[in-house]
Image (cartoon, rainbow, N blue to C red; front, top):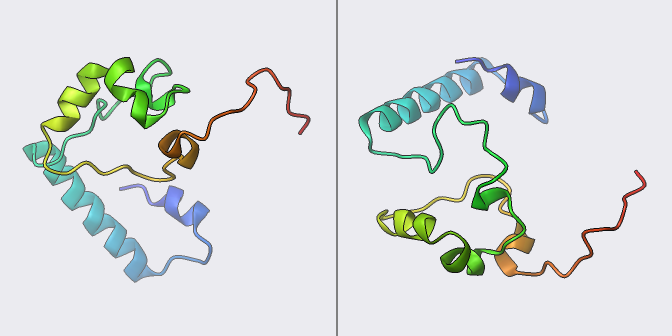
Length: 105
């Protein structure tokens, strides 16, 4: 496993124990993916396409109307984990913002 991503984004230097734990975790995750115990909603080699529900402006409450196949697929799972920085605006439907305002940063 390439640990450079984690090392580059860590708030403090990673120890050898940290790297060993990351490698162990990645190995277990890969094993669970390979065996089918875990499944991703996108192909492992996906570039996370820009046309699927996860990257649209729609809130999670809109999923049944916008992406019914995704709802049906997720409903087959006993547990769904939203990874990372769950977008609270998408989750809480607080998206009343103008999409045509230019950011000056």
